[in-house]
Amino acid sequence: MKNRALLYTDDTDNLMPLARCLVKRDWEILSAGQTGKLLTDADIAYTAVSVFDDSPRTFGDYGATLQSLAASGRQNEYGHSDETDAIRLVCINLEPVSHARKNYKASDSVADKIDMRALSFVQAACKNYKNIIVLTDPVDYEEAIVKIETQSISEAFRLYLAAKAFNMVSACTAAAGNAILQQAGDKSYPRYFMLPYKKSEELINKEQSHRSACLYTLLHGGALDSLRKNQGGELLYSLYVNIDAVWESLSNFSALLKKPPTVTEHGDNGNETEMRFTPAAESVFTCSSKHGIPISAALGSNSAESFQKMSGCRKAFFDNAVAGFSAVVDESAANELLKSNLAAVVAPDFTAGAKELLAARKDIRLITMSTPATISYTIRSLNGGLIVEEDKLTLFDSWNVVTKARPTQIQADEAAFGQLVMLGAKHDAAVVIGNMTTVGMCCAALAPADACFAAINRAANNMQSVSTNGSRRAEILVSGSALPFDGGFDRFAKSGIRLILQPGGTDTDAESIAFCDEHGIAMVFTGAEIDS
Image (cartoon, rainbow, N blue to C red; front, top):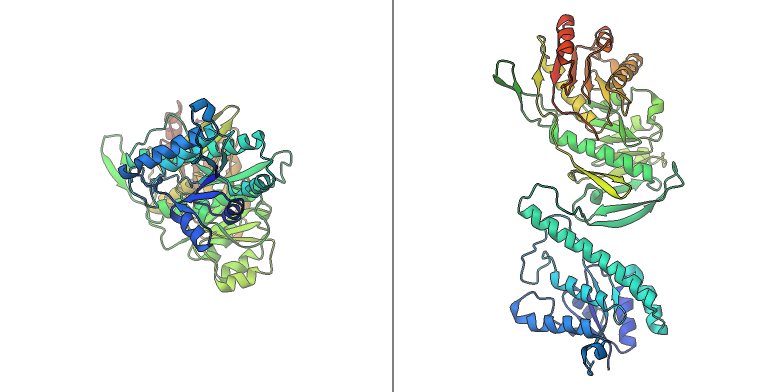
């Protein structure tokens, strides 16, 4: 009896040493497609099979292969005495894809199909793991080679390999289900929440050393696919968290403020009007994050000016933070970055001159990214469960001016800018905006009013800075949560706030509106609380 091996892989790492080991020990290799071509190029003999071609003409061969996998080494159970066609090793790995690029219904052998036949071979081999070695992870090939050559393959090792194979199958079938649901336009939450994430690297968490962490990324679908480190040290746990927060904010800017959508305003008389915001396509947006929440943000005419405005807040806030630019970082911006204590900078690109200047600061990681952040799920882990939220890519559910005073166009634009920054904030949070800059901000307070007071206090301190002051006062207050009326509104008025943007919907809205009317403050209700 001659041992046979079925080889069919998307990931070809470490495959040739395995194939040579099998040939050396007189195994017959069965293969097809890309794997067969690689074997040919390496002068490794193999038998071409058609069992992976999903067509009626090959169904008999497909069924025979499944039967062989189920019966291999179990002739007494199945009444077979002839095992000349027994397959003793299956090396199949497939790449799960989390979006609808793959075609579940493809019947021919094309690269973009979801290969259900290959998955069925893996499952059949796992069922018969005591007699078949099932390899799906190239990391395991070297150990498998040693055990094959020394004839020391234990049942525990076989079971371990089968478990990893089931893990791959579950990821691939989850990807298939997601692809079909997306193609069908299904917007509901699936009965089982499964997204195929692949292990990328284990992370160091210096802030909480008692915890271990590992980065998993979506294949062909996430912004992290486009992350490239151009300079600097390793990317730690906290850096990934902040890089992701910054890039999401930059992506939101491109989607929501470069060409902002029109918002419908519903008046008390039942009339509807359109609120149009000024496009920011000609401006550069900069933002920064620490502990996964925003520190500051600004709009400027160029990268250097925007960064100067943003960094006008307390310098200590930016120590070991991550900053992001919506435009290419040039030499002028690089000179400003040299004055900072940032841990990393994220941008679409850096000019050659900027890279040369920043090369003197190896402690600053230079990160380029190009794929917009479009994955809309926010996942919170609980003991034994997950909370899955789907984020809506919108600034406002509505824009209802509830006071006699109406925002000016500049005030409305600054409020929209503040709302954009608040999308990355934690509940309760508030921000004071002046000159298209977050002059004062507070995230994750214990109450909406506390967040507003803290933001106003920080704004008062930061307004001493020329870079944030500009030609106008900071007069826009954006609250991510509904504000109940209390004595704090008097403090808003005394601080020079002229526009309050908040969700509204409290029992004391009427009192808030009356106070604002009395003091000439405009107030807009958006109807949506920001709670990430």
